[in-house]
Image 1 (tube, rainbow, N blue to C red):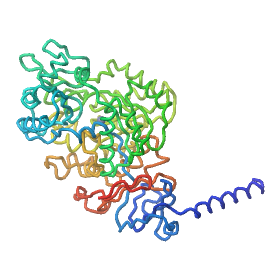
Image 2 (spheres, rainbow, N blue to C red):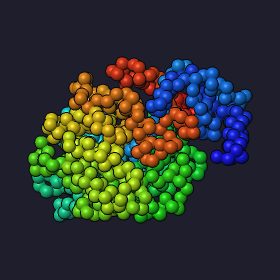
Image 3 (cartoon, helix red, strand yellow):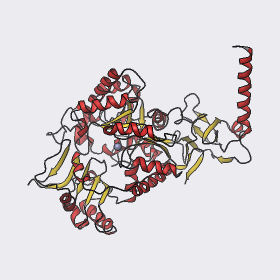
Image 4 (cartoon, rainbow, N blue to C red):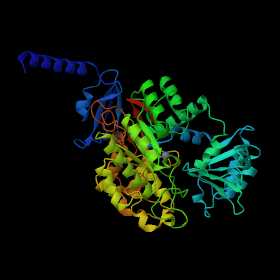
Length: 554
Ligand SMILES: [Zn+2]
């Protein structure tokens, strides 16, 4: 290097240093116990933020020096602070509609289901569709599927179509079936099932692709409705310490509504949106046309391999233990598999990150095969294929995730939910590698966490408790269900922060509390890293900060 060049570099360094010290921080946090997610410096007591970004992380003396007369000084009071939680799998508009609508999640039995539905329906104008509900028959002592006979007395002449909590089936009343012209003569569509009574009459339950029969006659939500749902969901995220979501389709107007909220300055959660793989060309064009910034961007596309365990549509190599006639089904878009593979290859070639829902062991194994073939065909690059759920895995397939650099994007709360009845459905042997967090981490697989809200609660703290303790919701496994698959608190935190950022190619800007990252962090009521693990369910979010701004405080 020439002397002149060296002098210039020195001058630039001095200038940038003086610029830093000239402009004080907007916010400093002191006297906290900061877990940074940065393995080179995991602990600190203070940080400073300016213009929405972190300028420094260190001890109180270093950071105090960066404050000025207008700096907001936050006393951490010795509390644990962690990077803002990143949820890798949400359906925010559905969650918002769920918060605004009828809640049938915790009904005791069919009579209670009908009673609560009647109460809600009576508050709705005549003729309006009654939807959502998030019901779950598995919580009933006698877990029979609901039927239209349970809906008709509650809903009167209004059409009703209520979704199960996992989104893989709906139950309709007679009016809705009539409007959709679903009768005993309607054949099951590919990838879907019309549940029928012994006499051959539809019971009202439609599974997977059969749900589209109703979609065709149900009036679409308006942009104003979707925006209201998303705004509700955004507030819920702040309360739960969620500062970023990788959001999946819930409504056709999601992106329009997200863009409106961004334009109105109403986003307090950062959104990485991932439209349907089947519409990958539209996603590619939309990404080119819209502004992709730190608040809202299109990050990739999402496809489907199979259904869900609760609906007996997750695809396995062996039949279901309690229903030997079936071993699950492919999702409609994976029939034939070559169609799905062609779309994955095309989206990957167009530079879209691809994630695909796979629950059963066969769906996961065959999807890994597809990913391997596509990577070979399209050539090496940093593509970070993702499997959403990765719920039931053959032991041999676990190391393949690491070898193929496929991210396991999982939702730990499902483990303590499904863990109540999964053994009945698929037997103990297959459950040993169900939600196999420990095996995946041990094999060096990138494990990223999310909630799948509104299928499960949005709370990352509930997810961390589930991953660490694996206590099923029915209280029957106080020591943990399949306890050998538990992981540590720091591993679970990592899956909700730095690995979650990596899972969306966002590790340069978030996921850790280090200089230049966005100033997104959460103050917790207790320290999950030091309290007894059995008390993790007592930890609460005290405050949520996004871009250096307090967006929630308890
Ligand atoms: Zn989902």
